View (cartoon, rainbow, N blue to C red):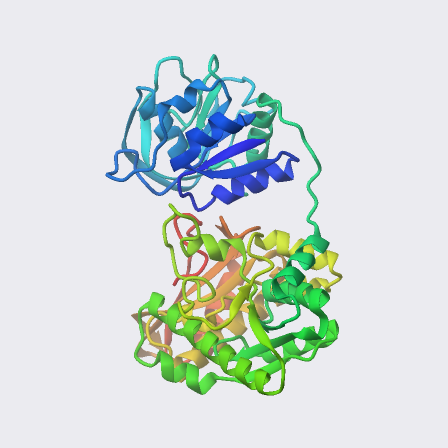
Length: 507
């Protein structure tokens, strides 16, 4: 087994997933008791994860340099490389910050760089860099800005990379991890998601109680709902909150999905209440928390109604996936990126206990489970849509008027992507009402209107993304339609920022 020492990276869990995909057992452990655990359990290999801290920070997480004396192969990733360099006598400084793609050139082929091309794209996310290596280390690869991007001490089998091999957008990342697993001489075993085990776990938690399900029409909550229904049958009651923040047709779409599954979905109308709660609110974190709290209030209200009819409701099923968890400070040392309404936005004193069958899975894994459950491809491949809906795609206050503008712009984007036959190739697409104003000329007169930003991206598991390279003519058509058809819009801009540094949504 390979042990992964967690220093708080957003993608530590992803390292574990990649090893499991390779058929290698992996276990995440905390840095505070890493030495004790490793000394006792003697893993085949050790990975030191990335993290949000600087190695020179006041409370920077660290391990004893004793870890390098266990004669166990070690791979330091990003912060893990920087910590290794510092502990063993190298030098780390605030360097040229890199977020997103960079080209690495391999200058030496050894065990860890075996079968890698001379040059390929890696994904960076760092603010510090190693400028002096400890004694015994050599450089295996460099980028334009980072000389020591791929290093090794061959004698002690200690390796380090400044980039993230575990993320989907790093080319040949799995090959690097596979090479490391071979260095560790680990045993491999085919990894298959056990759907029956997920259902058994739901049964074990719910026992003979009723479960109400928060369903939105998205793939995550739909797959979670199907698993819960298979596990506990009629004791599962799906509820769709129609809060007015969803795309046109979502309500009908949800009813269609659950008709296909063979379950009747309960609808709660909450648009008026939602807009009252959001009145005057401009801070994105506050929006998310208000919506999260309102959802729970509405579900607890439904719980009381059901209890009156003799249904002992104790649980709320959510379609939470791992990317929701980690961005909401889901591990001890990770940073809080944003409070997802279904994680960090939940009230502390909930009467309902949570069941989250998808909590440990990524988007592409959830889709694969959906396919195995027999869900039609149109459901499984549906674009992700945020739980807070249009509230986080409207910068500033959410009003009825701005919702109309957002809904119309969103419809135009979807229509044009569909007409160009590229919609199925896009992971996510949406306009953002930026709240910024700019001057336009309409009908030979001055117009001072809002700027709309387009975010159209490619991703697999939400942990990283890049912007879609759409034809210019298509972008022009979308822009022209939005400016002409959406009231008080002056111009359209295209967001070409990768994740990192950007998140998927603007808020």
